[in-house]
Each structure stands twice: as C-alpha cells, then as structure tokens.
Length: 84
Image 1 (cartoon, helix red, strand yellow):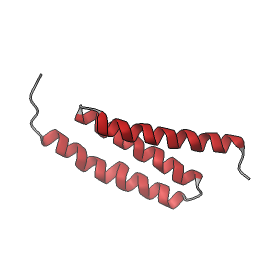
Image 2 (image 1 turned 180 degrees about the horizontal axis):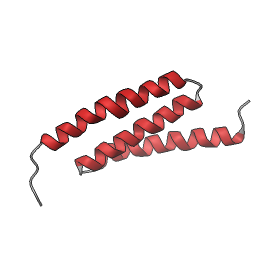
Image 3 (image 1 turned 30 degrees about the vertical axis):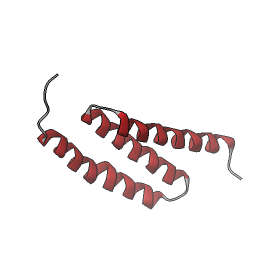
Image 4 (image 1 turned 120 degrees about the vertical axis):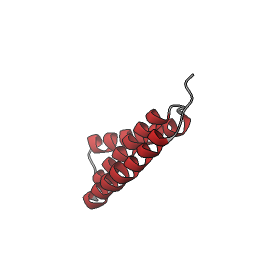
C-alpha cells in the first residue's frame, strides 16, 4: 500500500500536467506555449518515475524534453510574427 505522501505527490503531478496541457493549447504567445509543453513533459516524466518506470521517465525527458522541444523552438524562431 502506498503512503499518503506518495498519493498526494501523484495527484499533484497529474493535476499539474493537466493544467499545463490546457495552458499549452490556450496561450497565445508561442514561446510561453512551448515552455508549458516542456514543463508538461517533465511532469509526465515525474508520473512515470512514481509508477516505478525510471527508464520510461528518462526516455520521456530525452525525447520530448530535448529533441521535440528543440525542433518546436526552432520552428517558433523561424516564423515571422507581426508586432502588435
């Protein structure tokens, strides 16, 4: 049986990942959206770690936190945005 602190941390990470996924879609600034996407990848890696899957958590950080976010940020920097 899991300890109450473990369950609280698990629920907090799940809530944080849901909040960050909503922010990723709803934010208008592309850079802030990319940062919330990276934070969501980190929180999902934390969930995997709590589920006793450290290899999947590291893979989550390397692939989504690293490669996909670099490509996403490069695409953001290459787009032409109008100044408001």
